Image (cartoon, rainbow, N blue to C red; front, side, top):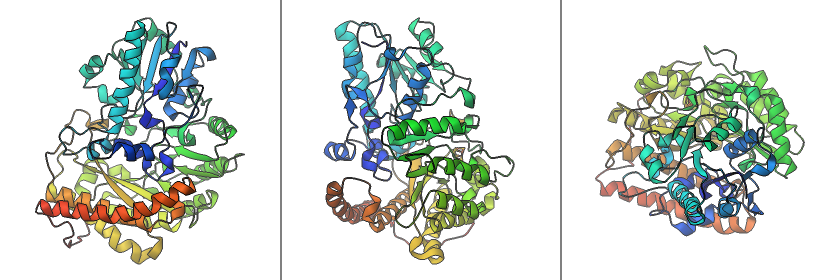
Length: 519
Ligand code: SF4
């Protein structure tokens, strides 16, 4: 039995068949999204002797940091299906990594919107693993501490009673790379409060490279942002750039296990090593050097960044062209990226996120979005945009502005670049984090016409976009793909029809023509 057992829930132990945006399936509610379908989309990664072969990146980081202070035999990352096998009388701490324990993340809040008693698979998965660990503790009469951490730990900040009800001993919020062994020793010896907030940050050289493979072969190249969008947690962290040596070590770990892909984690990749923090002009040379280093690494065949904003694409098309060449982007090999459009309302852009538009001005936002999308697409990048619905003081007209911006993109983009025009867009619910911590969650009882039209138009656009995708876009087993792809195409039209009928049943006309007023 092991002194420190780390694990996670089942929704975080799947690569969702590499379906684009498939990881969001965990945010769906079981009472709307059948269990059998979820299990098909989210098969569990295999285990080896009960250990996770690949694990969420945050868990791998914690494991690596703990191994600086504890011997190898005292720390394991257990696959959630086998966690009981590692817990015994020698166990002092069981740590559970979570991204969305209470279903309060922006995607879960949106997917469970409006339904009484709706909750997400992520919440179900978290409760399930916690209860299983509790049962082991009770039945075997053990005394280990149950500790929860990870990017979703903030959800307990104002819900400490939930942590108590679940018999969680400690919730850790913040980065622990630089203090993990000391922190765990203190937790073992009972010296800390239930809610542990880590206020210090590791310096880049204190961030230890992972020692075992990560889910999706994820590798982090920077932490934090500096654009100061007020609704975003990333902006609360100081921007730091991970040394290239650390990045290369992590690539080695993943490629040694046969992983040829590298997902590059950052909050905004185009801020990597940015020098001009007044205009946020991307540092083209550093970005080129970074991706050259990654793509020339032995064993790496494909790479794509996870997040990046739109304005840098509009500001430096040459950089995008060069990055695309390095990343070997092409008609059969698009680079996926998740940027935030957030809103079409210039009023809200000015109020909450004016630096997102830099080096441009807030008033230019619509053109920045159009031009940035055009540059992405021309260079074979496929943006999966997100919006934020329900910002404090958002008015109906702000939402209509966002509807109009999406319609503007749909109208103008194909005229500029024809068949190359591609994007999907997903509205997310506002959650009060970052500088807006303490504000109300967005929790409407029903849909206003603007809200419904926004959801309808986003989903319609995204579903039609999926219809246009080549079968090769879905990186899954050919037999599954042969079955999955036609069903998906048929299902999409049915889904659009149902959405439209739903809107009409509420007295709305989701297809009504819009006067696109350019801000
Ligand atoms: S640009 Fe993105 S990551 Fe940076 S503060 Fe804004 S929302 Fe957060």
